[in-house]
Amino acid sequence: KEALLQKYKGKETCTKNGKKVHLYANIGNVGDIPSVLENDAEGVGLFRSEFLYLGREDFPTEEEQFRAYRQVLQTMAGKKVIIRTLDIGADKQVDYFGLGEEENPAMGYRAIRICLKQPEIFKTQLRALLRAAVYGNLSVMYPMITSEEEVAKIQKIVKEVENELTKKGVPYQIPEQGIMIETPAAVMVSDELAQMVDFFSIGTNDLTQYTMAIDRQNAKLDDFYNAHHKAIIRMIRMVTENAHKHGKWVGICGELGADLELTDTFMEIGVDELSVAPSMVLKLRKQICEYEGYMLD
Ligand code: PEP
Ligand code: MG
Image (cartoon, rainbow, N blue to C red):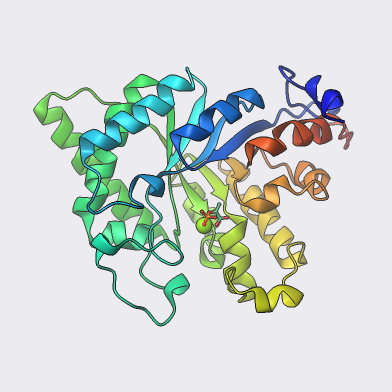
């Protein structure tokens, strides 16, 4: 079976009816890159940057982050790398952030909310990202978005960082920028959001949690959890239609993206990119290459 998959290495990910799909891999740290290349992913679709912040006593400096991002970009040698800005909070607690106890951490102070409330933390990461962008094919995406106002605030902060770097004469580049669609609110305003950003990446893990009101950490709820719930599929369709209406591309980077039972559905919907665990890349490429679909016009 493994040998059968090997023939998909180096092959284009394209359906029989001619739709080219970008097949990327999810990683948590630099050490995961060899398996991304070994499994022939076309890039990194989700780099969970919070690994840089976990298991340490204090914030990583701009320089430390810059070096880590540059290393990823250089190792990927021109292939796309989508780095997600920090998604701390909820299940990922870090003492030095001083976040304190919360009654409902999953619905609490996390991810982009921390970045917007404590912009110095955010700006340090953005400076490192913009500087690293010079060394490869970088995209940046922002987690846990719920509204246009949040995106506007992010854009304002990015602009400030850009001006600071220009003023100091530090080399940088503005990367492609997208948002994660992982709250029902973002789905419902995806028409407007699509006009503000370059791409969407659907985080089905959180989107399922918030749509079905099922804590993703609570095993007691397993009987009620249906990853294939029509609500989620309809949301993915709606988000894709809204993105395409405005000429933007859509990926899926949550676990559902690797679900081979849904690959044909995602192709029919017109999803442009899937980002999955490195070990799933070739299985998924086989499934996509075998998809016949309808003739595209
Ligand atoms: C998601 O929510 O689907 C996702 C990809 O992000 P994370 O699992 O890191 O929350
Ligand atoms: Mg998430």
